[in-house]
Length: 168
Image 1: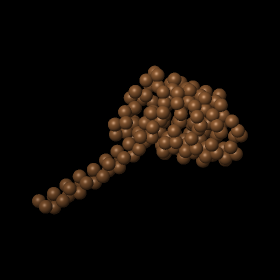
Image 2: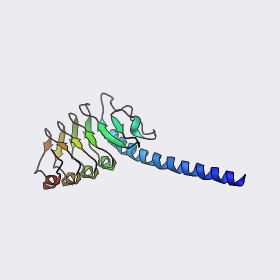
Image 3: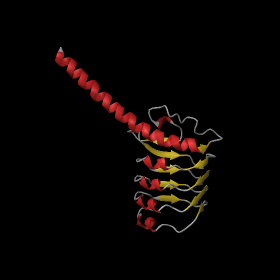
Image 4: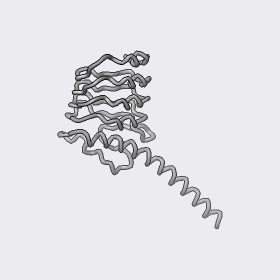
């Protein structure tokens, strides 16, 4: 009986640890997205499903996740949003598509977006983004599409972007 109880205890501990690791990762991505949510004005309520109390954001509208419940896509183009981008977006390490075009996003592009090593598409066109393009975007070696047109950006295009061979 004691061996069976010990095996049951070990099995429950392993399963609990696995679930806690999954929950912690999901919550950190949800937390990062919820920081963005708090900075945005959303008159059309497109973000009303973004509940920070859920285990992960994979059930939120406009958020796509992979089979491991990791955020891979944020689709908020043409959503009548206004506000600022947040550095916390740089914590979405599996993000492949960041689509925030045709809104009224203001402020600067956070340098932390350069941490998104899996990013394929960064679409921030038709907003009111100002400042310079961060050189850290040159770290995005998987980037294919970078659309920043029709904003209020100033300064030169960073030379670091030349090193992205996949960029079209």
